[in-house]
Image (cartoon, rainbow, N blue to C red; front, top):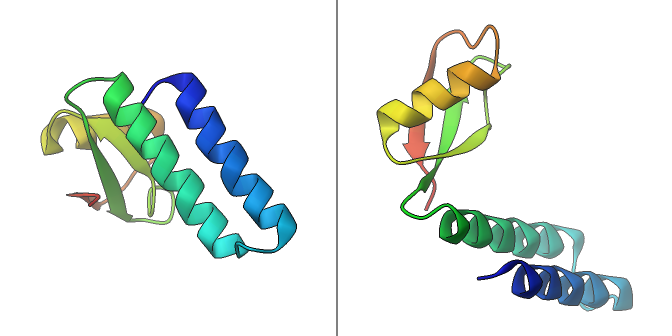
Length: 90
């Protein structure tokens, strides 16, 4: 997915939300899905990983080629990451 396609998909989702045919949670899901698709295709062979654990990292999603690289990315983004795990986002 290229940038223009991603923006069009987000614009369509926003228009549906504005007309009342899409709920806020559906809008969030659509936009999140569009962004993840764009980011993973843009960056090549990367996978999305979600961190779970200490409050500072809990729920953080990063793109990385492996679980080890995902852990390193989270640690680079959060100064006091504490104990956490990363799992692949499906």
